[in-house]
Length: 210
Image 1: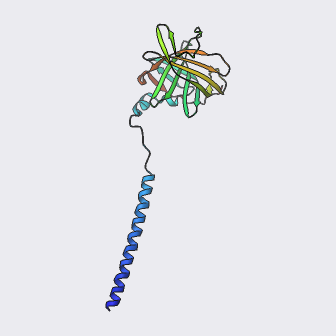
Image 2: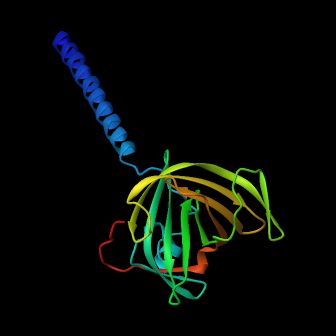
Image 3: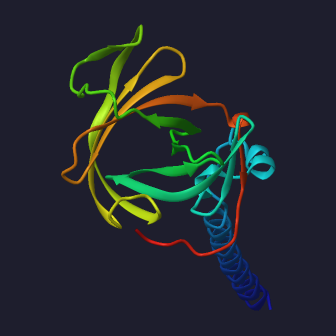
C-alpha cells in the first residue's frame, strides 16, 4: 500500500504541475491580448472643446461659412497640398462685398491658421534670406515644392505642382510667395489668427472640382 500511495502522490503532483503551467500560459496570453488592445497615446493638450464649439478648421470645405473677427466669408474653393508626408490646406474666401482672401490651415502640431491677402502690385521675388517691406523685416522660414488637389472654384487646375517660399515677420505678420504650374510668383501678406478669431459653420452639399 505504501508503494501505491507514493505512486498516487507522485502522479497527483505531476498533474498539479501541468495544471499550473497551463494556467500560466493562459494568463500570459490574456495579458498580451489586453496590452495589444489598448489605445495608443493621445495628445493631452489637444483642444477638443474649441473644435466642438467653434468648428474644426481641418474639415473646412467649399460651401462652408467662416466667420473671422466678426466678418462672414463663404468658402469658394479649397486646395489640399502635400509635400512628402506633410499636408496643409488653403481656402479661397468670399465676403459680401466681393472681396477675396485666402485662409491657410496646417497642424504643427497645433492648428495654425493664417489669413492671406494677395498683393499683385508687389514685384519682389523670393530667395533672399530676408525681405524689408513697409518698415518690417521678413526672414526666410521655409521653401519647397508640393503637389496640390483643388476642389470648388479656385481658378486652378484640378491637380498639379506648385512652388512656395514663406517668410516670417514680426509678431503675427507673414509673407508668402506661391507659383502654381508654370505661372509667375504671387505675393501675399499674411496675418496669423488666434483660434478664437475663427468660427466655422459647416454647410451640406457636394463640392465641385476645378
